[in-house]
Image (tube, rainbow, N blue to C red; front, side, top):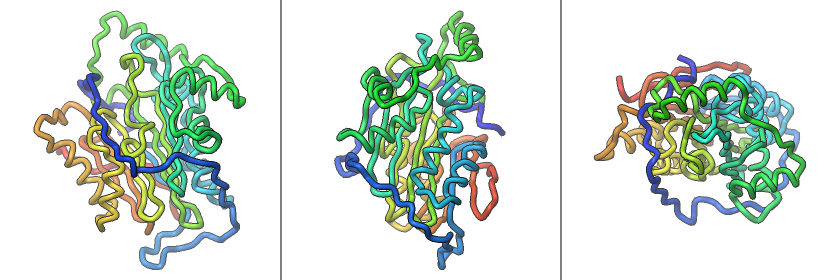
Length: 336
């Protein structure tokens, strides 16, 4: 299946989020590592480097990230450039320019990025700027903060040379106007196609970075923020252990701090696959879980170059570029 068709009966009520102070520290300027080393192979797992994985069938994005890594660029450069491909694609109604709007007709973007040192930058509720991921990187590298929101994030972007654009395409506008005739919020699994693009990369030096970017739930309440820009929920990187990124109903990922959980499980010795499956289990085994009516998917990699991915429902997939092969792999899932 393609990456459309994803969420059903998602609640937009309150979101509980508890992420400890130790998840990561805000960024200071961090120099890029572009040292010229040849591709290496982990002697234990025989996984050739570099390595790129991403949520969904986004092989153009993994291709772009791979091209950066083959030039011996850093994993941080690779994940940013991979996300920018999806953000600029107006036919992709889940990310960047052309994303589906909130219920008031505003396209608002969330994004975050984490480098090999655990430095983190994010934007939430950003309007009029296509490349939210690049603004997030600017926040990380050029400010003392981790997150900028709304008008403040837009002002910061414009002051740093980003171009203001109308992100509501004619196709997304027509769908929104049709939705307004009933204004019912009942997105369905494998139909809405709103999902996050998350990318993880390991460069020739064995350093890991991650990024994710999204326009969020279609027709969401104004001001809604999902898991994608929140460290430890939508994305987490620990260069000593590995990294994970989420897609799907953000409220459920937030409540379980999913990506941080996966990395901590890998720290304890679980494989990326085992960790992704346990993180999904934490969601579906909650006493009040309505998991049959929504989707969540995770991807992960560890420091050895091993990867894993898992979802609640059929239809999720992972793109993987490794050993000169760019492929899209269907995910195993909980609900058979």
